[in-house]
Length: 421
Image 1 (spheres, rainbow, N blue to C red):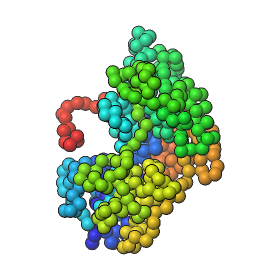
Image 2: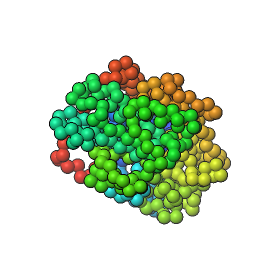
Image 3: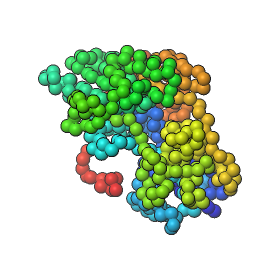
Image 4: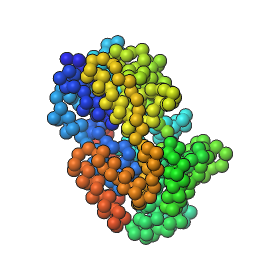
């Protein structure tokens, strides 16, 4: 029986596992986390709307009914294509065929210090950390007697006007407009500054003109400062330097401006293309290693006339690539070329505020918000998780109140050194 090792249990990796023929393949899943998560809702973790357990689901529970599937926790340290092995933090696993589905990570565009100085919502851990820092700023601001320092503490900058940036900026705007007076009576709305900057002339650049316009209007209604055609140059000592040279102080910078392929140690340099993505053909096979390695999802770079820079690094291309690859592998030959079917794009700005482009139709407001909620709800793994999310959304909708604004600081000792290996 042929053994397939799949690196990454996101949308691409997990859908591939579900579709592969267990009678034909022995499947090993490698992931640094022991759970699958739902990244489109990471911003709600960061804004205390949900807890991580609401949108994460253990791999072992998901695969327990699957035949010939095993899970291996670990960071990938090296891939040896000649020996056909993957070395992780804890073990070395052999394979007959390797599938890279590790997804993407933050792209700081050469500003190397941003990884240590800014906050993100690219992973569940980052979202939790960002939530704690946001709550920390509000609590410290509430007891700060120096008005100028209080305003510094409560200055938030979101960099990047894609769906993630719009959604986290909208969530912060809702906290400023609705939560502040209920839970932080010591603070005034003017004490809080929320700014969203985008380097191009539009928010949500991949969406329709109608959706872009409504996104700006929705954010402004939530007291978010939106700045377009604004490029960030550096961030040092809490001061942001913009491309035009002027500087501004921001205590908290949330980065959503770009992604790149997750680095895969050991992969030959000629297989890595722009943005750190692995170059694949129309069947998702890695060029030059077609008989051994495939790549799917965010990490895969498949160019075409319609997508000269590769497919969007979103859930739908990943899911569709996984299903097409499984079809070819189960057949035993590569006949079905991948063709992406764009089902549309959505983004939520706040309560009753969302935009959705579905085919030729564009929606905004309450109806788009309902569509957004429904599609996201049915996409979450586990009935318990679906119900938990629904209850939280319903309660927040009625009362703008949640018991999830808990500042949970991790203990320092004993150090878990092997987690960083």
